[in-house]
Image (cartoon, rainbow, N blue to C red; front, side, top):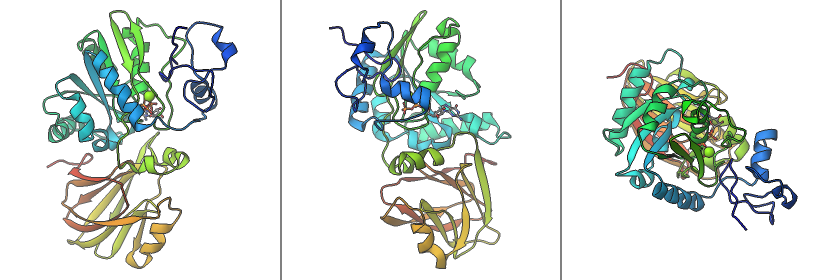
Length: 359
Ligand SMILES: Nc1nc2c(ncn2[C@@H]2O[C@H](COP(=O)(O)OP(=O)(O)OP(=O)(O)O)[C@@H](O)[C@H]2O)c(=O)[nH]1
Ligand SMILES: [Mg+2]
């Protein structure tokens, strides 16, 4: 029998186990035509994300197959979790490829953010992270911002183009919007790549044929150390920014804490006169300012994590401390000597500030 694949998530279709990816009841297979699995059907129609996320090794295998097939590659990165989208072990897979970096979700930046500055910032960060001189497009798959330029450049990458990136950066959303544009001959198709707010939706590579070009969706590379992957799915959806980000400005001196209960605490050890910390996360996340005597309470409150560690951090004015999969704290006015209380296994990065005046 011919092998069938789910057009939404790329999983191989099977009718034996509803608890595994790609399940379609046997009687529905007889109807023919393009097909989507039960999991995709339920994500699309009921917003229910069953069977969890794709496993890291399965995703990696599928990405490797996709890269063998592709001529050109579009690396999709989420502007709000930039460094988490560029793990060195993933970047190594892309070395030497015809590559374009699509920096997605720019609609979530504060409205007054100058995007030309953001683009320069992104190029500089990509260079620092091992991708010097790559082409960069700033885009929003939700509003369509930047898509005419993206479509032009994608067409220049060859006749087989694969979209890659870590989970949940919007690969399927970007592909879906391109399919609706001139690359897809302006036709809206019945079946689309499946999109969901939960990381790990796409299971395997799926190919989308358009006039003159075939686009490939791929499962997300599963990065290590992202807090949103270490909490339960329901909490993950609350902390991943969807509609907007919010900023919280705190005057901070020695002994002060700036924190998100149960997820991270930034303790100030030393700061100059008038030091300010500015926290950025999805607007559903609650920030607090507190003092050292309440540290234990805030670490444990509603926390999914039993094991915490402390890390010393020196943050200069104009630098961000990014907590992978959560958000960032930016220093203003003075240097800070900080102690970061963070769940074991969660990564942090120090970088030049994304938002605000640059040096
Ligand atoms: N605000 C905003 N949200 C976006 C944008 N692009 C995608 N999203 C949202 O991000 C979430 C993930 O989108 P997907 O397209 O499923 O991401 P993916 O990279 O294919 O995810 P996996 O298949 O899990 O690896 C969904 O909730 C999308 O609606 C964007 O440009 N702006
Ligand atoms: Mg996807």
